[in-house]
Length: 290
Image (cartoon, rainbow, N blue to C red; front, side, top):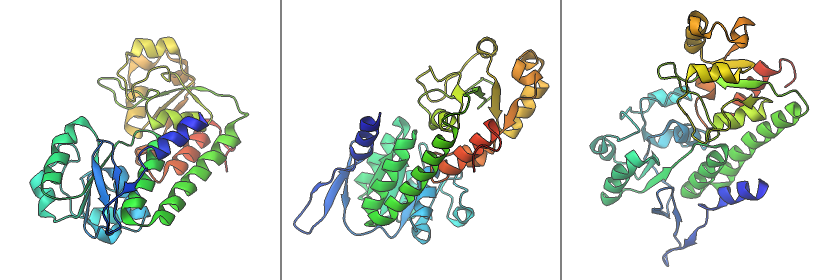
């Protein structure tokens, strides 16, 4: 496990020698090369995760564009909203005159990345779905900005909190958990999601941890069969579960073990991962984590 984690952190951070002017290049999650030269001055971040990281790295004043989902930290709301981060409005992005664009590396964004690169704009596409992806993204952004020390500090701070929570819950019972993400269709989290990792760190066991997809669609009958000891949901989801008679036969619902989580805190695999782990551990094991 440790070897695999280290490998995942360094595989994209390998820089190759660049031109005689001292630049270098790295590879992003689309396999595209991005030149590391002067620090970017005008940045468009089209991923809430990278926007949070950008502020943590001190890039706030350099941000000239974001998506309408980028609302943390509060200062992000002051940055120009350029719309969606999936299949973005490329003309609007180019109009912001960025010298760096941060994209989520989904297949839907490959055409946008190609068009931005064709326009001569440095574009860094990152797929951040797991905790290791977050650490890798921070360090890659640090390389691009030329501030690797700050990036390391951000990454290490999150890692320390996650390690502390894992240690404090290691000897505790591991209650089974169903995480309610969406109601119709019923969506939960699988092994491919950082939320599955957070449940484990917080001292729980995801009843759908055997599914490889990050957000699989499941049937309520199967949830009843798996009989989780706890349900985790946002405030709206919890209200729906409590008001839906189909859930009333589940022991967790009968016993009032529907735990409401702050979705704004746990909703991004970013700089607040440590806080999210503390919050989850406090729900599953009240008083055990400090």
